[in-house]
Image (cartoon, rainbow over all chains, first blue to last red; front, side, top):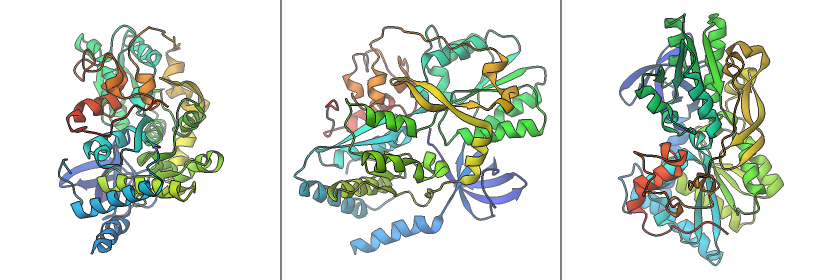
Length: 70
Length: 375
């Protein structure tokens, strides 16, 4: 299953982090992420952060395409 | 577009739909077969009504990227055998419990009192092991490269804490060998791949390079929103029009060329490739994952001397053809008549991401665009 959802890191303690998933808070394992930082977004899958989400690129995708229509 | 309200504005989506139509017209509307490999993409395609808005000449095929769907019956039978062993607690992801074995399934056994627990994460299974030191906790590891690193990380944690009653039955598989098997299959025509999103977050887009270089097939790694999928299809059609074959990443906010190298290292530390049996394909070389010998103390196959016994039961279930994109669900004799989400006969209906489950759920908005896929 490719299901993974974006989650924002709120706090970090060793390999655990508390994340905000659209208002829901969960404790997850971040051992698969290199140098995770508070405020970063990660993809959450089966209790682990599996990769970062680049919010700049996410925003760019939306803005770039909107500009092309105008 | 008659579909669920989208997070992207209609104008934006219509722009890319128009681009796809224009490119297809420039190619005289010749038939183009694109395969979405991943089960989550199959669901997204149906949920967003993508097939309805594409030109009729673009055929979207669903591929074998549904780990539950490709798990063969003998694995389910082996798991069922474990329920006969005293003091064993089975832990598994949810979908597995409804998959039919040769005689029964885990859900029925659970209803009859067997110790089977559904978990969201392998970490939950490890917690059972800590909580019940006199029980043997077996975790059923199903999933591709997205999931396997998480199972590997849990094994490393168990090793660190010297937990001795935690075992993993690895039925994990990897995607690229199955993609090679698909392009080598003379019965299937694939002109481009919509590549998995989250598998690629872990592995990087580099794993698809062989498809572009050796087979000249365009590949685009796609996200899961409507805009992601439309953009990816546009990128594929553009490559086909320009007669190029490259690996491109549409889902660049979460996928890089090299992927998550830390997760890859964790996976490679614990698992190694092996030849493995896929429902619908038979044995594909180096397509499965097994625990390395230095982690054999966590290997359920070794601990319980599990033997896999292939079952050859005649059945009208055509899940195998559906997984290779050769048939659509409603071409199956059992579909809807006997095989439904409440009473699934095959795993394509069991899994929440199976092609049959997706088709069943969204069938009433499948207006046009459904075409037979056999060449």
